[in-house]
Image (cartoon, rainbow, N blue to C red; front, side, top):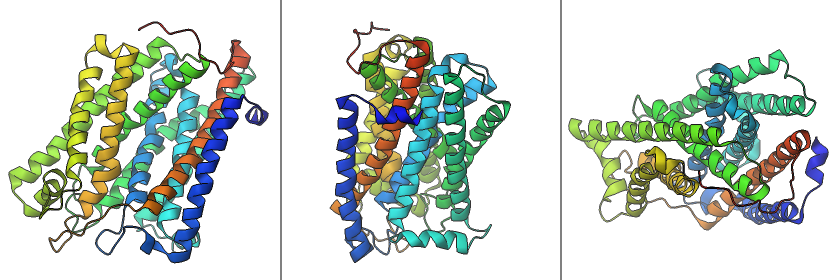
Length: 399
């Protein structure tokens, strides 16, 4: 099936070349970082995790999106997801590769990765994070590829493949739980020090990850005519809506606990994020944007009649993704490290090299995803027939 990645339309190759150029540009900034060290980033003594780890955290959630398809498909025999499930697993592969990429660029020198292996310890949460991330990557590669191969050959996937798929569901919960423990285990960081950090991570993952997956699938449908089915789209949209409601509910629990207990250490991060402290209010517009978009997306997603209209669904999903990214991919890290344990504010903002290196990692993931989805869609078209002309299909009727 790999040969399908070597053939494609000018738009396919143009996409890969465009992403490749972004990788090359970011590579130059990464060499700059390797040469001059982490001082070129905005990181400092008080804020030791920044934009890289924030993106890693958010993408772990994207990787877990596949479980929202695998779980109903294998545990509840919901076969409507059959057309999307491999796309979800391939998205998980690309997301985990990006996660690993952000860890590599965050530690400064790639060879430092060996420290995790050479000094492996069951007491190290980072060691367990390495295990679960690489394990989840392996599971999705095997399950996704074998399932696609079986579909191509008109065969039922082997029984062991189904077993691995079920294991991947449990594994998906573990990657987010272990990552949450990395935060919750940091003493003196009150924004992270909460028992429901893992639950918040899971709720956020199960709304933002499937939302990105559904947006990409709708975009793919517009490009190629690949249709996963109206029932599947509507069902996944319902799952996303419930998960977003739970995500907001968990956040409000944190707000109530912090302010009702009146503990200064727990209140300070909220003040910094939503009102600013001592004139440091860089995060305020971002966080209030997240609030407006987070609540606003529910206006499009909760009413069934509105959600089932594709334009409204797309708007709601985009709002959800932006809100969840600001909350988890920006506010969580910065709010956790600000104010510092001395109750003073050390401002952190990502530098241009950090952003360019991050774009390199995103583009790398984009290449992986483009190639894998290209193969998956072509196999489906080959088996079921149809046209993959890479030109816009006839207009889809409003659902």
